[in-house]
Amino acid sequence: MSNLFTANPWMRLMRLDRPIGTYLLLWPTLWALWFASEGHPQLGNLLIFTFGVVVMRAAGCVINDYADRHVDGDVERTKSRPIPAGEINAKAALRLFFGLMLAALILVLLTNQLTIMLAFGGAAVAALYPFLKRFTQLPQLGLGIAWAWSTPMAFAAENNELPIELWVVFAAVVLWTIAFDTYYAMVDRDDDLQIGIKSTAILFGKFDLLIIGLLQVAVLALLVWAGLLFGRGAVYFISLAVAAAYFINQYIISRGRDREACFAAFLSNHRVGMIIFIGLSADYLID
Image (cartoon, rainbow, N blue to C red; front, side, top):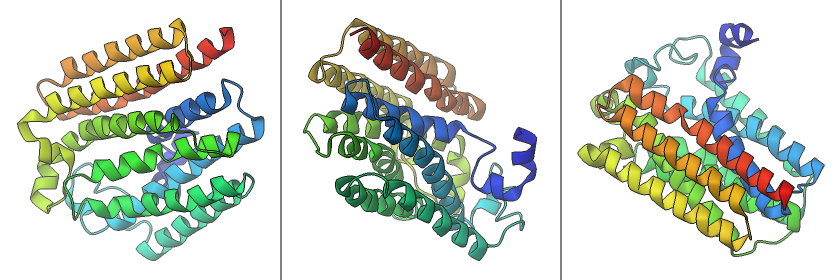
């Protein structure tokens, strides 16, 4: 199956051959659903949000490559992507983006009015993010907001309301996204400096690992706070301790700022999200 995805330029444009981004978006979406539903999300919402993650991540990749179509050819890691490689033209990619957004709209129409209203805001943020890297050194903040948007949507879908506690989870997801995407941006930092692309990896400079570490501490603190607000037990808090160990390991392996090591640190966040979800869901299960 992976070979099929790799061989097809449309699959590669949507990054279906590289599911890491889907995982990184899925885990915080599941956190939100479990918090919102006290561990018992409606099956319909679980299916809608899971398929929505796949569709929106694909749409985000397509619009990102469309936005970067004039610079991806100058970056070693991205020059073989379908648009700069000439396998798919820009107009066709844009049509695919709108098709994916239509699919996402159909999914969200199966929920309630509050969730639908929030979805339009999320779609706007997702479409805007790829262009931020030309205007601000904080494009990862835009990505973080797009990544965390599933949190209020999950609460709206499950409860048709937006309790103030959800914004603690929202903030945790935003900061976690900035941290792991800074690792990702460190891989391309030299190329980005040459072509004028902005990122937190460039903004943070020699303090990159220190700031990532501080962001990760803040993420854990916010998730501890969320656990207290939502009445979680020992299993959940143990999962946060395991996540902390993964964060420490990310720092250790990336200290030399080698590209492959930074990319490995980025990939490690899939396990962070998964461990937290396992702890959260197990904690609700035994509650």
